[in-house]
Image (cartoon, rainbow, N blue to C red; front, side, top):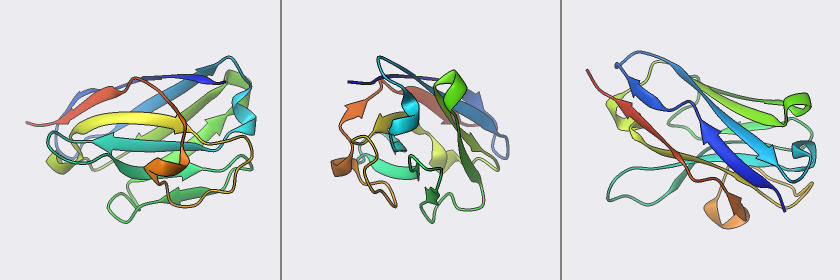
Length: 125
């Protein structure tokens, strides 16, 4: 089973940008669809973006145009770049893997089974 570790979170000013990384061990990441999710205090975990095992990307409406997801299979890493960050983007961000070569679209929590520990992103002046 694949193990995932997120990194790259931190404090960012409104309007700023950051890049989150999700690095895998235990299995080759190329086989897995990967989703990014976030959870703000007092709110349910929600999907942000996903990339299929063949490289198709999907973004939820709230981040469309501000988020770019990519994968570097040689580094066993998936990235989420976000620009024009807003205070509403403040949350713990998680990456997660679905079953190998599963069909995915917009990320739904239920469809993912291996989760990282999360990285905090705070957007504040």
